[in-house]
Length: 370
Image (cartoon, rainbow, N blue to C red; front, side, top):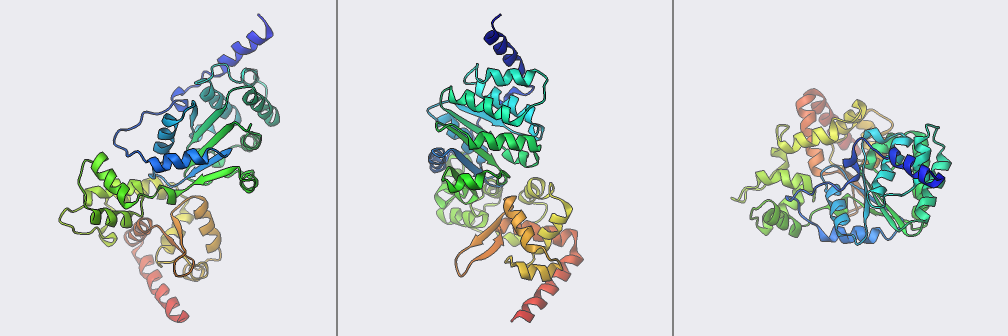
C-alpha cells in the first residue's frame, strides 16, 4: 500500500464520528416563516471571511442558517456544536467530517494525525487544516450554537483563532450562537473589515412579517393593528410572537405585559432557556436591576448595594441577555420589555419582601436625585 493510500485509509477511520447528524443539515420544520431579507443579509455578510450571527434563544438563528445553506449555490459544511465539542480532537474530527460530507477526501493528512494517538499540537493542526483548504475548492462553514465553545479548552481556542486568521480568501466561516464569540482574534479582523455581524435587532419581526407569520405559518388572520401591537410588545422576538399568538384576542383586547404571569407559557420558556442556566449571583443582579425601568450603572450600584453594576451589564451584553440601548431622548439602556416583565414577575413571586424593599429604596433614591 502506498503512503498516500495508507494515509487516506487512516484518515477515513478517524472520521467515524459518533453523532453524524451533527454534520448534516437538519430537517427544516415547515411551520417556520422564511425570511428573505435575512437570507440576503447573511449572503452579503458571507462576502467577508467571517460572519457572526448572534441573538438570544428563539430568534430564528438556526432556521436562517438552514435557509441560507439550502439557497447557497455551493455546498455548505454544517457543524452543530454542543458541550461535547470543547476539546481539540473532538472539534477537529467533526469539522473534517462536516467537510467530508461534501468532499470525501478532505484533509487526509490531518485525519491521520488525529488517529495516530499522538497529542495534538495546535500550530501543526492549523497548518494541516489550512493547507487542505488552500489546495481544495472554495468552502463555506456553518458552525451553529458556537456559544458552547465559550468554555472550550485553551488549545481548541488557539486552533480556532489560528484557523480563522489564516482562512484562504475563497473560504468563509459563519459562527452562530447566543453569545458573542470569545475569540481574541475577532477585534483585529473586524478592524480589517473581515467580519460582518447579524444581531438580534436584525432578527426583529416587522409588522409586515408578523402578518406573514400569522397568515402563512400559524394559519390565522391578524389585523394590521394587532400585528403592530404584537410587534411592539414582543419587540420583534420570533419565539415570543409564536407563544403570544395564543393570547391574541380577535375582540381587539390588547395584550398587556402587566397581565402576564409566571404560569404563562412565554415566561416558562424564558425561565427555562434564559434564566435557569445562569449563576445565582447573576440571577440576583438581573431580578434586582429589573425593578427600575432604565439601567443606570450608578443608580444600580446604590439600589443593589454593589460596586460592579457596570461590569455586570457588560457581562449581560456579552451573553446577549436582552440589554438594549435606545438613542432617542439621549442614550439610555434597558432590558427587553418581555424579559424585564419576566424578571419583575419572578422577583415578585419568589422574593416578595425583596421586591417591596427595592421598590421603596428605588423611590427614595429617585426622590433624593430630584
